[in-house]
Image (cartoon, rainbow, N blue to C red; front, top):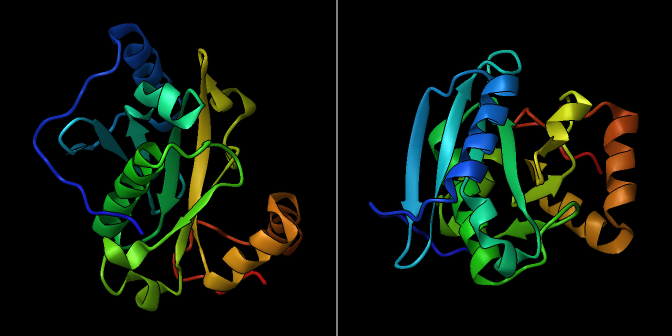
Amino acid sequence: MIPAFSGKGFSSMTDNLGEIILNHYEKFLGAYIGADKYADKSRGLQILGFDKVFGNSLTFATFGLSNYVEDINALCEAVMTVDGDYDNCAALLANVAFYIIQNKIDFGRGVFIGGLDNVARGFSKAHNKSALYFTEPYAFPEEFSRAGECEMLSAFFITERESEFIKQNGADAFEDILEERGVDVIALDRPSAV
């Protein structure tokens, strides 16, 4: 279950790493159009918004997740592109990131976190998506996958059936199906791929 976080303060990453990541985002995503801060009593990060990176969509990017290497066993940030329900999607990305940090989850490709309705009541019913899934960057040039030493991950929402499929068959089998069927994971209201 994802606890909801909000707050005014946030901890800042080291200046050099933060500058590398921000420059990386701006190189591949363009100038950000907004930044929201999320924090609890001891941790913080930002969600940056980038307009029309892919068609008429918004791309959200974590900025500060890389501060928590010891908690998540990874030096990484995550990006997520969606075609609607932008406020809820940004809040869900932030809250999932906090959940991963707080629960010291080994973070990387194949991780997915459910409990979305704990943050955005009714989200799962409205969009038939129950979890946020993380993988290697898709639809980006290969150079996007790293910002210096920082790994980039992509995130997208998945259905309950897809979550169960991943548990039973693994991330490789799931991603093979997505590729074989040409699934548009940016489409928030897409049907289940399995």
